[in-house]
Length: 124
View 1 (cartoon, helix red, strand yellow):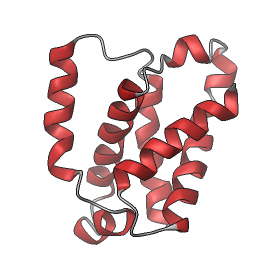
View 2 (tube, rainbow, N blue to C red; view 1 turned 90 degrees about the vertical axis):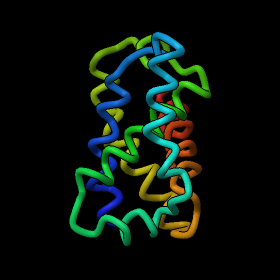
View 3 (cartoon, rainbow, N blue to C red; view 1 turned 30 degrees about the vertical axis):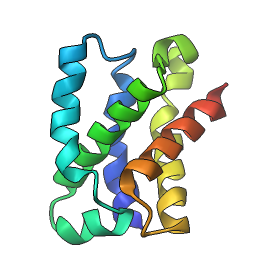
View 4 (cartoon, rainbow, N blue to C red; view 1 turned 135 degrees about the vertical axis):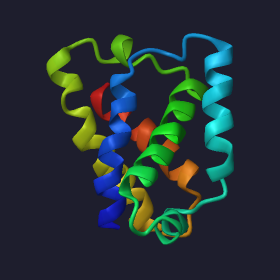
């Protein structure tokens, strides 16, 4: 799903959002924004927003923030080298594209979570 990989790039701005969510109320706002989209599969989000790559990217970004928070991943702590962090975007896009290509019916939140995990693992 090339549109997923294109829009997933925007989700990596989340990985640049280094560190865990700072406050519970901030995370609650993120969850509130993400919840209406949690039913989407990799395929259905593209079907629902066929001409709105920005909206797909925003949904992926929200889901990635939730995944980082749930996994308690502090990107700056895990990948302290700025040059290494520069490669996160490409790795995340590749991992998300792989997850969605393997199963287009997979819940997007699950695919994003796997992509976050695999991206961070690639830099460990």
